[in-house]
Every structure is written in structure tokens, then in C-alpha cells.
Amino acid sequence: MKSDLRALDWNLLRTFFVIIEERSLTRAAVRLQISQPSVTAALQRLEITLGLRLIVRASRRFELTRHGELLYGECAQIFRGVSRIGEKLSGAERDITGALRILAVTDVRYAPFDQALREVHLRYPSITVQIDTVSSPQAVRAISRQIAPLAICLLTQPIAGLTCEHLEREEFGVFCGTPHPFFAKEGCAVEHLRGESFVSFSCYNEGGALEPMLALGVGSGFGGRISGSSAHLPEVLRMVQAGIGIGILPVASVRRELDAGLLWCISPEGVQLGADLYLVTNPAMSLELAEVSFLSILREMIRADRLEP
Image 1: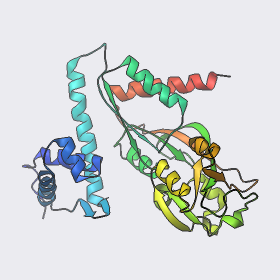
Image 2: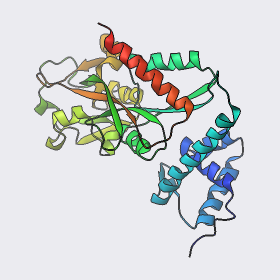
Image 3: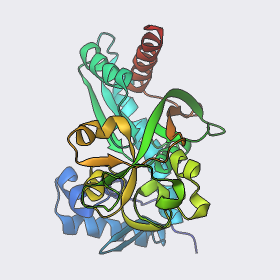
Image 4: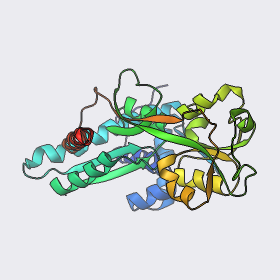
């Protein structure tokens, strides 16, 4: 039996969209400035109206169903279109307004990106910027579905159908904390690391193994025992330092801890570990003026960085 959507309350779609953006009913209520019971009731009304389950919720679980993912993608395009109406009707020529949403892997260290953020604010102070930390597989899915305009993430190779611009090669290493038996030991080989408890980034659990994992042999026992995981580098670093397990970390991001003697590098000799950082966009996506402007500035900063000796 098909649902009659002619009487669908668009406020329900807005509430659903914010719930998914915030990944929390509580945070959605704060953003919408309504009570949490009202948010819950709106979600229930939308599911009843559509006759579909959209979100699976439990104490430690928040997942979109297949129908929920499809609806979220459609809502993203609807509200992006609505946000463009004011921009197009205002006729503003001197200043650019609008929201700029950027997806990025945790703790991105890339100077042209920071310079572009600074420059876009100087040129167009009315643009509001939102940076969401996601795993690389999540970033690719969002760009593919035209939910976000751009992402900076790690890829083993360019993705077909998307524009993937290589930014730089990032050096990674295998590290342990002071409580670990390998701390201060020299000459660790790959076979010594196999079977060790491993603190991973969430993308590894999603089937998106980082290139350093592939170099060490994902299928040969390395990283098989996962003792902790997070999508955020500071939390992965925290667990590694606590001795929960060894972990693969970007060298530039943990230099301070390494110099302070809080970490020890146990990367096997002769094994080069790294990952490629990419700017990912979708050529099929219609971009807002704020997004076009930022991408232009970012590419300007990338070119300038590459011209420096």
C-alpha cells in the first residue's frame, strides 16, 4: 500500500535531516530549539507517514536503514536548493553568503587547506563554515550521494565517477605507548607485530583499510586483534599511549608525543608506510556560490604551495 505524501509535513523532513546531521536526538533538539520528546515524536510521525523504518536506534547504535539513507540523500538536495533561494534572490554582488560544509578525516595537516579557510573568511566573512570529521569511506559515500560538496580524505586510489585531486603523500608509522612491552625496543619485524592487540581507526572496521595496513599485510595476521577503535585521531592516540594496543598513526600528527617520549616507533625496517591525501568532489553536483568560491581559493592555495621551492 503506497503512502499518500500530499499531506506530508515538510517540517518532519527538516527534523529528520537535522537528526542525521547531528547523529543524536538530543543534539538535534538543541539545534532545532525544541524539546527532545518533540524530536522523537516528529521522527515517529515521519516513519508512520511513510510506512517505513528510517533509523535503527539502541543504547550504543545509531544506523540509517536503506530507506533512511535514500531519504537523507534526497533531503540533503532539497535543503541545499532551499538555501540557494535566498542567495539567488538577494542579488548580492559584493559579498557572498551561505553555508560551506567540508568533510575531512581526523586531524588533517595540510597547509593550503588552512590557508584557504583563512582566505575565504577574509574575502567573504558572511560565509559560515562547518567541518565534519568522518572516515574516508564515509566521505566517499557522502560525496557520491551529493550530500556534501567536498571532502579531504585518504584514498588508496582515485574513485571512478568522482574528481579526486591528489594533495600529498602522508607518512605513517607503527607506534606503541610506554606501558607496552615493545616500548624502547629496537628492530621490530613484521612478524613481531602480527597477533598484537591493535588500536584502529573506524574506517578499518568499515572495510576501508588504510594503505599502511595493506603494506603490512592485512590478510597475514596484522591487525587481527582489535582492542580499541575511534574515528578521531586524538582518541586513537590516547588508547595507544595507554597501552591498549599498537597503532598506525600519521607521523606529523604525533611528533610532539614522540619527542616527549610518550610514544615509541616500532615500524619494521625497510617497510615504507604512507597514505595519499585527496580532495574529492562530485562533478555531477550543482554547487552553491560559497562552495564554488572556497574550492577556487583552495585550488589557488594548492597551486601556490606547489610552486614554492
